[in-house]
Amino acid sequence: MRLADCHNFHDFRELARRRLPGPIFDYIDGAADDEVTYRRNTASFERCDLVPNVLRGVGDVDLSVTVMGQRLAMPVYCSPTALQRLFHHEGERAVAAAAAKYGTMFGVSSLGTVSIETLRKAYATPQVYQFYFHKDRGLNRAMMQRAKKAGVDVMMLTVDSITGGNRERDLRTGFSIPFRLTLAGMLQFALKPVWGLNYLTHERFALPQLDEHVDFSGSAVSIGRYFTEMLDPSMTWDDVAQMVRDWNGRFCLKGVMSVDDAKQAAEIGCSGIVLSNHGGRQLDGSRAPFDQLAEIVDAVGDRLDVMMDGGVQRGTHVLKALSLGAKAVGVGRYYLFPLAAAGQAGVDRALGLMRTELERDMRLMGCRSASDLSRTNLRFRN
Ligand SMILES: Cc1cc2nc3c(=O)[nH]c(=O)nc-3n(C[C@H](O)[C@H](O)[C@H](O)COP(=O)(O)O)c2cc1C
Image (cartoon, rainbow, N blue to C red; front, side, top):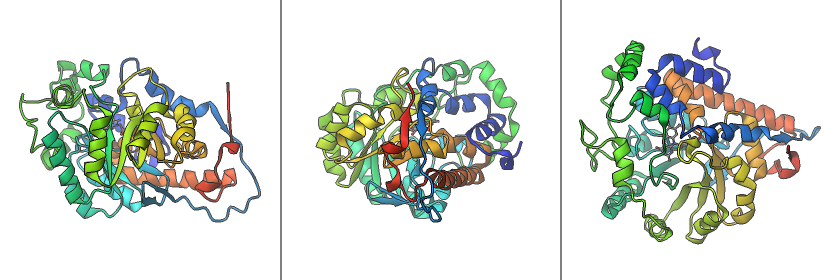
């Protein structure tokens, strides 16, 4: 199986599965508890039917949208994800380069493996910095100042990870940073020597957003302990309101699901919210963002930009979300499997296929731009 054989999400996932050591594949592919929410995220789009219009003169299709002040050439952006250089040695550089090529936004995680400065200098496309809130307020301020200085366009605070999710696949393999593999996990690494060779012969693994502040080497702090010990579970809306003031720019909350929270986000001056359950990796049993979208758009859509992520694998999924009122849609595994499969060439291909699907599907829907999409084009099954 080669990259040219990959025509959709499932093909990229399969190629990634063949190339990655099992514990790393499971870290990307896995989710919390029984993975019910993970499965439901994609299934939720299938409850919704598209009702196309015809003969609308769709020779030219414009996929661009503006979200949180950023103009994107297509309505899909790369959501921030951790540890990308572990999946492929090109890591965040590959994702940023592909996002720039397709004129869209990319997120860099606090647990990213390339620095926000390096990425900002190399790629001129909107950059989001994903932030976790630490107990140490001085550390929060220092990290925000650094992001400001780097020229990050949007600050994105993830609020659904107040504590780590229960990822049982990782418990079985021993996946953690630093590695604490079980014997079975170690054997699976031995089966993928090409991955090992690439890992060992490229730039040393690092977490440059945090390395100055947290010692992830040896037996010091694991990522699990970082979540349970360094992040602040007592964080409240007052803390976030202060952050919004300190940032004094485009600020977005990722992981909002309830109407009350969406209203509160608007109240404290957020420019956007992302409806998200972290790809099913945190609270299993939580609602799919697509199912919750209409309620949230109706409540706050006129006060801030509503986005969503979770389970998006197809252009039609994106069109359904835009029809309900989302301003843009984030993808995670949709670009992570291609990254793992083939580095930048993989992410390029995935975003290219998405753009082609979106153009084709817009034409088939009888729509020339995102503003032509509306709820009149949707019907929900019972
Ligand atoms: C391997 C992996 C790592 C992730 N790391 C982060 C992270 O560091 N910060 C964050 O806010 N979200 C993180 N996410 C969640 C994504 O940003 C996004 O919400 C989710 O992947 C969307 O679901 P999808 O994968 O079904 O598209 C991660 C997701 C995956 C799969």
